[in-house]
Image: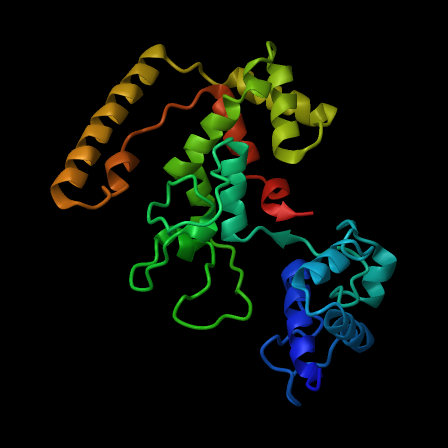
Length: 294
């Protein structure tokens, strides 16, 4: 309590986590050369409240998330936009893309495949259903998928991640075996599979992915997309099952011989058969509405 800088720095980091930018936009520099806080009184008040509540981070999260400013929508207001074009005063919610960990976990949730177990040893396989936070990070061999989605450099302390928009991110969502598998699992969920008509399947997918019903125009467009796709030949499913079984046997033999997990490349070369409704599920998982926090 004798050094209020500690509380201010911590409060600013938590605020940055929720809003994308801190009240002080240089989270590692509160010195004379740093940028002035956008809300100095708010920063001081949060720091005092944080200390008064026993330095409880949980209470701080609850305070921020129950506030009106956190619960705003991202709808633009032209009048306020002229006064505050950078939204420094938070007259609306800043659109934020899901970070890599949140995106991967959400894909697993949609596929009804996320392992909710807490604790335990880290896992090496990227394809595991464990939460991404339990992924093993090898500083000398960081998986390409981590680097494509702006994962923090494990060799240094990182106050905030640099966000990029590069073609490799879209290509990953289009071609990754793990994404295709989750799209198939999403389309196979009971809410979708039990719908008899295409329109019912579309509505179920929208509810699962976006937690809302599709607009009439979206419903018509998505249903037309599904109906215009060529049906999946039955032999493709049988072929995929045979290839997957052969890959499992090769992976088992590899593990037995080398006493370590088999490389994912054993499975990555197997083309995944996608039905029309599987393709629509994948399309919805690549939209901005899914990838960005509204």
